[in-house]
Amino acid sequence: METMYNEPDYAGVAAQLGQSRLLRAVELQDRERLARQMRRETYPAGGVIFEKDAPGDALYFVVAGQVRIFTRDPLGHELTLRTYGPGDVFGEFAVLDGKPRSAFAQADGALEVLRLGRDDFLRFLDAHPLAGLAMMRGMVERVRYTTDYLQQVMVALDLLLIGDYDRALKTVPASASDAAIQRLIDAFMTLVRRVQERGGQRW
Image (tube, rainbow, N blue to C red; front, side, top):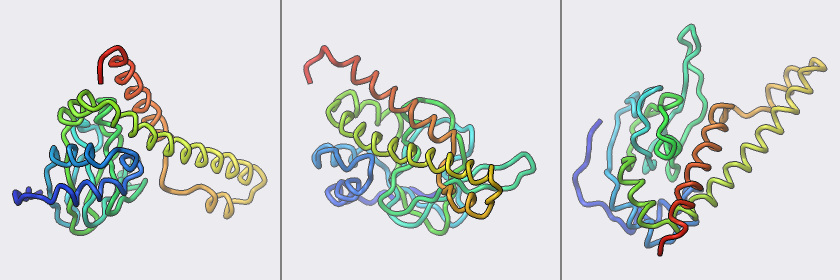
């Protein structure tokens, strides 16, 4: 991993952050404040961004390249859960709920990301709770996605019951897992509680 120390274009970064489902409802000036807390990092192909069970100490924004999120079965075989590309944010739920990482993240080719540490992120939410509320809107959209995913799982189970294995396999996307859905809900509730705690204070 290599850290680049050149001064980033914060306005450009803020605009890119607006492409993320999580952050697109956040006001531009708040996204720029967030961008100023980020560090630009690069990884070579195969570089490990974080390992499963590692502390959830940062979230990442993909500037260029792709990230592969994967896990391993008991025999050591890798199972890709999801891939992220430019404009995507990943690792955000771990920085909210403080739980260890549920999977591995690896650079799929040359990769450039912006890294935001957990402490900086939580300080930002405390200072700008309205931005936190806007992020929750993005999380709600992701919850809707996972609801659709669960519906697809149910359809796939019905197909399995009648022996239509090929259609069942094609019905369920390979970009989600039960663990990811639960972490989404946990992170959402954590953010709700943080906003509630500040409800009696002047914003």
